[in-house]
Structures are given as structure tokens and as C-alpha cells.
Length: 629
Ligand SMILES: [Zn+2]
Image (cartoon, rainbow, N blue to C red):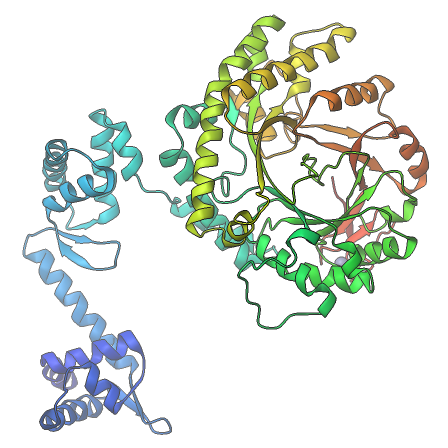
């Protein structure tokens, strides 16, 4: 124990303990840096400092790296420091007072007045109520048989007192947003199989916090309640408040605008401006960037351009799709597109083509969906935009749970529409909230490129939409005759249109598009008591648009045509084709105004590359190919 005795005597000095702490916190340091940091400033203190350093060196608590002439903590030094900390903590506990581990990783003596302060500061609780809650919390804390409190434990306690005493509005401001430890561990465990595991883990956990922040603390209470009980669905809560879903941009108009982006080294000259625009916007848009009038600039070596543009996208999960509009592509361009789709693990750049152009089944071979447009334009995700505006910011808005409304209306179609109309006040509150907070974020610098584009003339166009989730299932519940079916669908769309335009001050439209609500709403209805009347395959959830195949009936085809005339916000129409029946499928959909053309494809389970289904071994790595949905 002689060694222990010596070490204790060495660290019995405040100055020497301080040197250990600094080296532990800041890493290795030169003689003069360390001297400066420990507060031995003047020349005459040099001798003292050197003396302390020698003592520590002699006991191997610190060491000197000879090459760099820097001092650092040894393992023994670290052990001694840790022991010193533990002794200090335990001594505090034994003193009988209460200590709190704060969120800034410090220990502080418990002080109930801090509860009062944070109630007033964080949530604007009136002082009198704050003091009452704090003293209740204090008396409960003293009953705990624990010597260690954490700040989050105290917060939980205070929050439960707020709820007990009926102060829900303050609880909404004070509650913590985050995740249970179990959920975080689970995400980490599952992430291993993903290609971009690091980015995805961070993106996903951060997204959870923002979702909870939005629903618990930010949304108007009637909106939050309607979302939670499943009458409506706020889509993509990760980013709903932070970014718009879809942006349509006319490249010719915006290409020379300064969007304040400095990139260190840019790829090919002809792709440069478009690369910059996509780089900037892809960080500010969640679902799709649809670019018009860019093709002329990049058509030489189109394959190279597509690959370059892929590099502009952020690497995290759910980065947006890029859709390039090309009116009349030639065979060479389409060939380059197919090649790009085959040679890129997750191809994120797609095309919007004229549906009357020359197309062959070869376009399906890469498995990358394209949008085919008639007179009016739709984006890949089926949203409509105003062609006269150089920048359209399309907010996918709020989904209505139509089957829920139908279940509660006793097969009475008029009552059903009345119930839907009654929900629109809440939806208008949601739309207003979103418009306000998104505008604030754009002006406030969270979306700098959209901000600089919005400041230009002519002004951009921000439009909202209300999404008719489960239209098919809802009308089914009303048990219409086959003639009534389309009429009922059109009527409920018209009802929403009429009322929403009246109530919402701004451009608002009605759409039938895909978001993440179809499954959630169906799940909630299945779990709800007495609501199991909707027969749905849960993996697909409620319908959000149409999928056309060679087997789709004539009646369905004419229904889609009819609905396309009344839905003015957007419509999700997917056409599933295979190479063998390409031309007959295209003949069948000639009258449909626009659609997303997709192919039945397989994906390699080893490397993630797309492969045509008829191939058993991956064209890239030879791994097993399985069908995608
Ligand atoms: Zn493979």
C-alpha cells in the first residue's frame, strides 16, 4: 500500500488535481499550453508549476510524449481521477442532502426554487401556480428513498403533477420529447443491415423527436387530437413542419439566381448550375423536386449527367426524388436513362415524359419509374402544379380518414358528407398552422435556398391540399349501386372542395395521393372498438389512388377518368407494366391524363441493385434477386 499512500499525497494538492482534470478534458498539451490553462500565468510561478508537473510525472500519473513534447494523462492518472470523483460524489450522498444529475452532465444540490423558475420561464406558468406545483414536487421528492435524482426524473414528476392538477396546456410546453431507451437500442440493432446505417440511425432518431415535438407541443390541440384518434392524418410528421414535400422549379428562370450556395469543387461545367440547384433544394424538400426546362443543358453525355446529379443528393434515408422533365426524348436519351437506372444502387433521378411520345418496353428494364404526362403536368408523386409559375411549392397537406366518417354515418350518403364537412374546420386549423410555421422557417433561415428564390419576382406559389384517403373503402361502406359508386365519389370530393375553399384563405386543392397515412389510419380503425367493419389487407392499408394493370376493368378505367376531372390537387395513378405486354398496357391507358409507369422488378438482397425479375442472379454481384412489391 506504499504506492497508494504516495499517490494520495500527490493528489492532495488542488493544483495537481487541476492539471489532471485539464489533461483529461482537453487531451494532450504542450508545457506552455498546460501552464496557461492551469492558471500559472506569471513568470515567477514557473518554478511552482514545474514542481507540480515533476511530482505527477514521477508517479506516472502523466507522461510526456518525447517526439511532440506534449503532456498527457496516463491510464493510472485517469483511474486516480475517476476514484477522486467517486469519493466526492459518495461524500455528498453521505451528507444526507439531495443531489441532482443535470442534463448538462453536472451534479447540483437539489433546489426547489429551480422548479418554480423553469415553470415560469419555459411555459409561462403564473408564479403562484408554479410555486404550488414546485412545493408539491419537493414534498414528493423527499419521500423518495433515493440519493440520486436526475433532472429528467424531476421533470417527469412535475409534469405528472401538472396533469393531475388540470394544467394540460403547460404540460404541453414542459414535456420532454425523445425516445425510450428500448426504442433507441432497437433502432441501432436493426440498422446493421442498411447501406447507410450511420445516416439513417441519426435521421430516424432525430425524426422521432421532431414528430413528437410537433404532435405534443406545437399543433393546435384539436388538430393533434384528431390526428391521434385517427380522424385525420398529418403526413410525414418527421418533416411536416420543417420542409415542403414537393417543389416544381423552372430551371430556365431560376438558373442564374444566387441561392447563396458555395460548393468547393463542382463537376462538369454543363451540369454545374443544375447540380447546385439540386444540391441546395434537396436539403430543403422532403419528397420530390421536379425540374422543368433543364434537359437542353445536359443532353450531351446524359448518362454522365444523371450520375453526377445523383451525387448532389443527401445520403440520409428518404432524400427526395429528382424528376427531370423531357418533352421529346430520343432513343439515345432513354437508353442512357435505363443504363443509369441499372448501374445505380438506388436510382433517385427519374424522368417526366410526354405520354404521346415514342416509347418502347425497354424503358421498363431499369425498374426506375417515370411519369408520363398528357396536356397538364403532374409530378412523379402525382401532384399538380401551375405551369405559369416558375416555382411551385406543393404542400401535401392533411389526409381525411374517409372510411371512419363512412362507418359513423349509417350508410347514409348525405350524413356521410355532412360528417366530412364538419371535419374541415380542424383541417383548416392544421393548414393554417403549417403555412404559418413553414413561412416562419423559410424567413428564419432554416430553408435558405427557398427563401432566396421566394424573394425574387415573380413570386413563388405555395399551395395546400387535402387528401382523400380511403375514398374507395368509404364509398364501399355506403353500399352504393354500381351506378351510384362514381357519383358518390365525385360528390364527396366536390363537398370538400366547396367547403375548404370557403374556409381557407389561400390556394387549396383536393387530392388523392399516397402518403404514410393509409396504413396508420387503417390500423387504428381495425384496433378501434366496433370498427372492424372495413375489410382491408393491412399491409396495404386504405387506398390512396389507383394501380392499373392489364387486368383492370373497363368500369374502373372510366372511373379514374371521371375522378381526374374533379380532383384538382393531384392524383396518384400507377400503371404497372411488364415488358411482354407493354404495348397492350399502353393502349389501355391512352385516355388517362397522366400516370406513373412502373415495372415489376426484383432487387438484389445482397447489394440492393435492381434487376429484371426474369433474372435469378444479380447482374452486379451474383446475389439472390427477390421480387419487390
Ligand atoms: Zn447484387
